[in-house]
Image 1 (cartoon, rainbow, N blue to C red):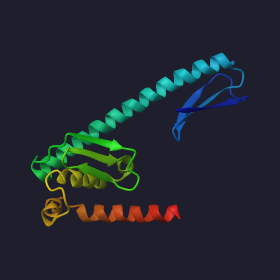
Image 2 (cartoon, rainbow, N blue to C red):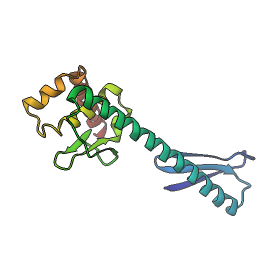
Image 3 (cartoon, one colour):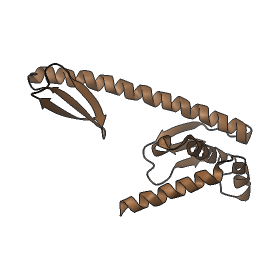
Image 4 (cartoon, helix red, strand yellow):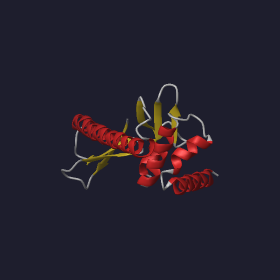
Length: 167
């Protein structure tokens, strides 16, 4: 993680740190020595990385619980994923399922979507473990989820809006 140190003549004692765009931004008093600065950089890096790991573990537990609930409620527990993780590498799709290996990846962007959309994406990928294609039988499974059409419209609108920002 890159580090950006901002020294302030107005700052006397307090030191603050936050992560902005995958950078550790540390705000320190201008009077600190280089040695004190490096100590604070390492201390804050460790603290924020620990918090980040905690957050990711909590998000993973929530995702696992959601997948279990969706699987039981809508698929009768038939889907058996080997792994289910958030992925930061998925830029153009919202989820993917490797049918043969049983690995499911959900785009990190989806974490910030309304819960009913996240639930749909998880259910959609779980259903691929039963029917790997988008056949009529596949869509029959998803019909049971009452927000399927609304979630698909939301995702379509998101894609459209994201495409407009790129131009």
